[in-house]
Image 1 (tube, rainbow, N blue to C red):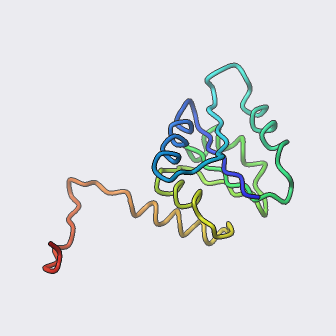
Image 2: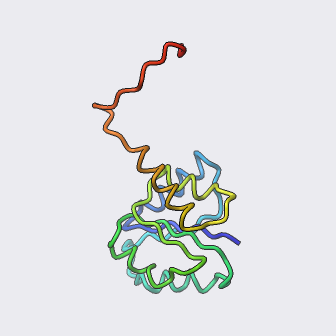
Length: 133
């Protein structure tokens, strides 16, 4: 079974889950919004992982590379547990909706695609195509 976890400082993960539900119909996403109450982050992460089977495929999307939230999940990385930092909507949608098995090469490809979707629109020019109407 695949589990998707969104985790962030404050409420970014909650908003990302809402966006995934709205745009992609993504359901059953676990969310950890760190530092919004007194519950230690390590306890929240441990409680979440206690409910998973060791054979489950787990995708973790966090907000900031090297941030405390990302670091809290680092000990859980493994053969079937993938930790992606710096998640955005394009990356989260692609991975959450994928029917492909998660592998490092597949996830790297999705990350590159998500990077390519970021543009400074002030300087971005779409190629003119005479066939477009």
